[in-house]
Amino acid sequence: MDSELQAKPRQTPLPMGQLSLILMIQSSDPIASTVIYPFIAQLIRSTGVTKGDEARVGYYAGMIESIFFLSEGRPILLWAPLGLAVAMLGFGLSRTFWLLVFWRAVQGVFNGNIGVARTAMAEITDSTNIADAYMLFPIVWQIGVTLGPAIGGLLSEPASNWPRLFGGVGLFVDYPYFLPCLVPGVYALVVFFSCWFGLKETHPSFRKKTKADDSEDASRTPLLSETDDSVYDATRQSSTESTHPSAPPPVSIFNPNLNIVLANYFFLAFTDMSYVVLIPIFYSTSNSMGGLGFSAKTIGTTLAVYNFGNAFVQITIMKRVLKWLGPRRLYQFAYSMSMVPFVMMMCQQMLVSWYGKVTLGVWVAIVLQFSAASVSNVSYACIQLLHVEAATPGTLGAVNGFSQTAASAIRTVAPTLASSLFALSLQSGVLGGYLVYAVILPVTLVGSGCATRLPSHLS
Image (cartoon, rainbow, N blue to C red; front, side, top):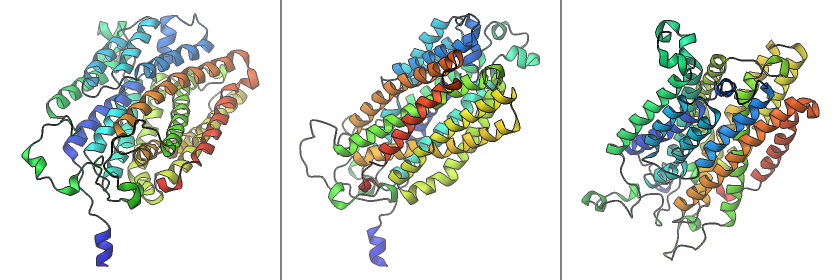
């Protein structure tokens, strides 16, 4: 029994102070990116760019979503919240389509900090607690995507929806979507000042050395240290893989294990963004065209309820499942579940087309859609851990930077492709109006096959 206790290292406590600041920066990302979902279709219609053709909304919505992730290919950590605050205010005050595109692009420029944040988190943790730290990413993301749609749905058009409070305020009458943009903008500003005074440099090469650093316990050695050979559940490695001889860093960051992890990440980014961009378009499209005809408030409330439940599932269930199955096996299962939401959306479209309205069967399909999406959501935590497992020692920062940039390119294509296919389906009636699902489902199936190629030792 004593040998078992010695074999399993004691888990290092998480550095909650610095970790909280990093997560605060990350939380501004999903709030800013999702706050527009409940009202983006109505906002595009109000600019007049569609010329009254509802079927064309998808083309323009996809463009706005794509430009966000195209700009996100330039990671910034500390200054991101400040630029994000300005961009959110500019977006809320825009009345023309191209101004919306411009400010959405600016948001993307100052929102591309995921890769930097992941690297910083790896540098303030070790292999005994990194799984717990990385599991906080999807939790914070879910909190953000819960608040984002709720803010966007409840605060859009405040003069009409909340006449007693905002009916006499000319700013909110003239700019009905400024208030839901103002709230995340103010929050981003608070995050900036908090991190300006509290966030410390995490990389040893740029951090000022203190006496405390010299006397630091070996158990708190950063994960990127080349002498760290401890193990922990889902991030377990063999001694031969965790012990690295002192040698010059490799010229290339790529290796066979990392290549297959990156391929899976790209499939995940494509599938997830295709799904995310379709929800507000499909939900706001009128019943006569096969959509659900939901208002911005209904869309925001529906997404907020789902994301609240999803956050609960991630915190109470998925964290335990991740430690039990490991990131590889859980990713394989979770990603395969991402096909179900598309199937359920197709069923909803069929039911609305048959009955001409949202029926009980549609709501059952919505519940099944979001239940499957909640399971597939843990894929991001898994793929982040697999990045750490597969990266060559000393290259994790470069790996995260590359994967974030490449994933941003995928996320640039996915919204435009998915929304354009949806619009084309409505306009042309190709494959009965279900062309978008006929394209995306096979891609997701190929991605599930790619997940089976993940090396078994990454578990």
